[in-house]
Figure (cartoon, rainbow, N blue to C red):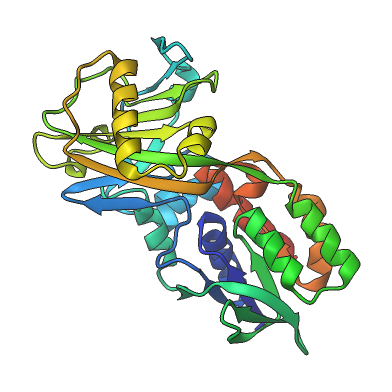
Length: 342
């Protein structure tokens, strides 16, 4: 059967891997990190369980719904009960959109990463393998890692990493110059905003609220998103504690990117207390994670790109083409896989 390499084990890559495996392809997934998932990431420290990337999954098309509720269903699947409210640059908090809040907000007691771990089962995944470039082989593409090691030859290659990294990969690859430049130009149209995620653990539990999270709608506050992580499930935190997650706005993340974690924790904790008008105790647990490719700010045109690349056995999918929602990334992986099969 045809062999296919998938570069990147995020939502799109894993969804595409199953679609292609179902169609009879022999699929190998290459992932540069120690685990699958991309921005679907769950931390586990000192009794806390927290999603420091994507926060939950919305209901999408029947494709992603079936993945969550049927094919990859897990026993600890939950729908976050409380709504998401909104706030503006001045910190004025009010109720959110009732239509959006009526939709499911899916997650897992053990963290959103549980879905990606489940999807990874049964797949041939090579972790900690960073693909540096591609070279044409007798039947397809030969992959080489960043140490120059030959990772094998495949009939097709499926690229699902962030667009800027994909452009760098293609720029180093042996592809006819004109086509290579066109592919890179289309990939470079995608732009990502950085995000600093800050986890703040409190004892006692912060004040109970009628909402699960707050989102800044005018995009002019230092805090972009603030969530009560312990509202997802009681198993998420040690008894008698609460955990707030603040995801910081792009302008804040740019400005504090190289600041040390202690400075960020202190500053963000003060900003959270001010926004909530609540005299929170000093957090006894903190964690900071910096997302270089946080959320797509501008998207690339997948249709034009794949029309150009599929004739030479390359395909592209991922959040660079559809935005930062988990269900959209899953669905795009399936869509492009079906185009490749077709």
